[in-house]
Image (cartoon, rainbow, N blue to C red; front, side):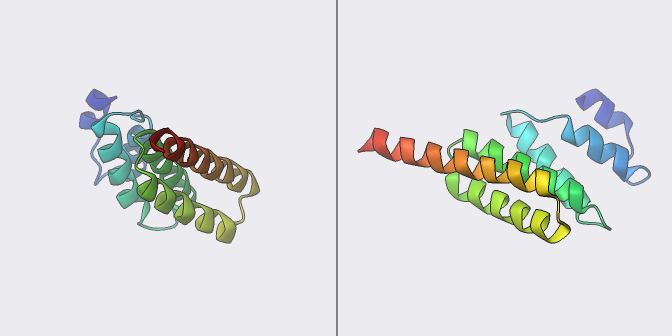
Length: 113
């Protein structure tokens, strides 16, 4: 995917570039950087669905790294956008992500108590 990304000109074909960035998900720093770049690109024009998806991915990535404040921020922003855009299925998935975040946070607090 990284090789494919270098072949794509983000100024000439930003949609393809953004799609490749989506596929680079995972738990590495590269995934976070790629998702942040995709979020930046989704800020242009009417790419609200892409923005919601990216924010959900960022929220999950931060949850996996136990960065709960950042995860909450990303998920809350995604939920608000999904409400405004009225995408019920995505709202359900985002609420599940928020529930997982709350469970992880509570579990982690109990581990340290």
